[in-house]
Image (cartoon, rainbow, N blue to C red; front, side, top):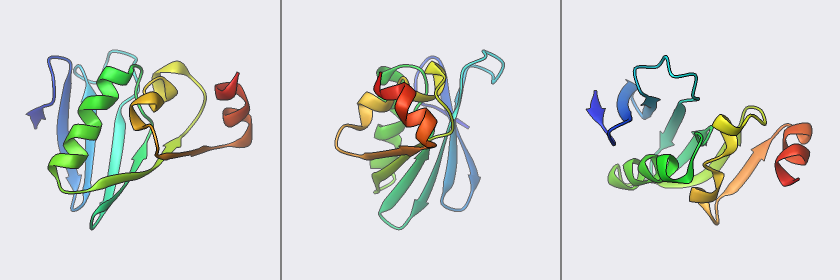
Length: 103
């Protein structure tokens, strides 16, 4: 485990996959999971704040990849609030999630 910031750490889950964990995992904030395939990365949930997602994006860059897709599992702010940090990256989710996020 390595710290991304004072509130986030990164854990390698498997080859080509890491999790960005907020606090000790009990804060009630969504974590992000990144799946990397070569130089492309899929981000599952973008955390609560763009500044938190900036740390996730920086870790992706550090690993020599580029975020290609952000998948929002649902519309809660702690899952979609960091989407802005992935400007220019396609964001996907359930149609209802997309409708709520666009509001």
